[in-house]
Amino acid sequence: MEDQFRDLVNQGISALKVGNTAFALLHFQEAYELGDSPELLSHFAYCLAKEKNDYLCAISLCNKALVNEPWNSTHYLNLGYVYLLAGKKRDAIYTFRDGLLHEDNSRLKEELAHLGTRKRPVIGSLPREHCLNKYLGILLTRLKLR
Image (tube, rainbow, N blue to C red):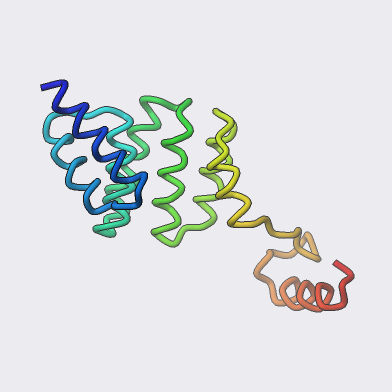
């Protein structure tokens, strides 16, 4: 039973590595019926979000994996991906940064670089979304003063 569980998880991870999340989801669902592990929960959550758009369940599964293994940066990576799929970019950035605090992971760094960093607001006392900050930032950037 344990061997079958491990084989299903490994097959799912292999399918994920080649980008076949639908096939990976099938393996992870079968494995989840046999038992669970933080590794399974994390990858299963990503596949659920990607294939079925079930973001709430996916976030819950990733958080459960993080409670059991808070040092494993792969869980932070998967949770960040789930947040991105759910349209929560800010939460994804915070999650990727949290993962880097626990383990040096090049994939987390790549994702943060890909998402980019924002410059500080022109007027720090106003919210970033305020029209003065927005339009002054655009103007100063076009004038190459920022």
